[in-house]
Length: 260
Image (cartoon, rainbow, N blue to C red; front, side, top):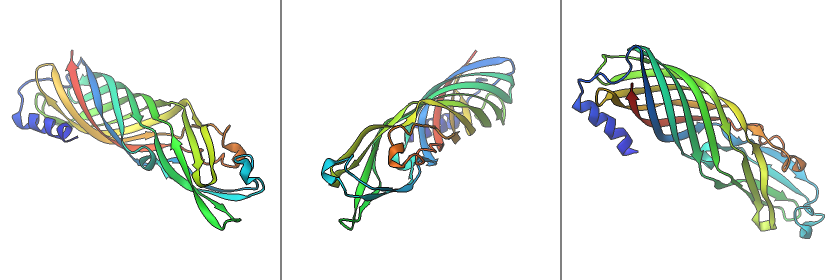
């Protein structure tokens, strides 16, 4: 991360007399990579439901009832930072504006967290409930517009906006109550599907040569609610907890750009 921040600043200090960057009538291609940190949005909502008989989940507990107390869990608590890579093609109507299209893959590894508790009246105690959620993987396709400031041929700040859609892969989850020897393995949670996406960008482009430049950018990204799959958890009365999945994040992106 430190390298991502230092490189463009060093290049800026060095200065450049070249004209790489947006120029009227010129196309560009960029390779994009970086980190994406979630700041808002839940992987699942909370719910409290009564299970009249735990027997179907563990025959040794036949006739024992419990109250499941599931709490909402956010993207940053379950997945934390995601890695992202992408490819962008852009066209500059002028040296101060740019229209772009970008395809980007964002991925975060699976994770296990405590999602709530199971209160058992017969024991007058609450047993911890854990969930292990599969990898988060989204392929985004977006179009957008940027406005540049400053003089062509030097480091130039910019702002931009984008809109599109993201295809998020299926997410499955395994739920466990270890103290009751209960496991619901590999349960369907989110189905593969498309969700609307949008974002705002702010950054700086630093020319390196006549046709090559480096861009450092951040901003905010949004992916709407995911496509829920209640086939495994609906029977437990938990069908509402996956009526969510939207994600707001802040990326830190470094791009290598070639103009042609």
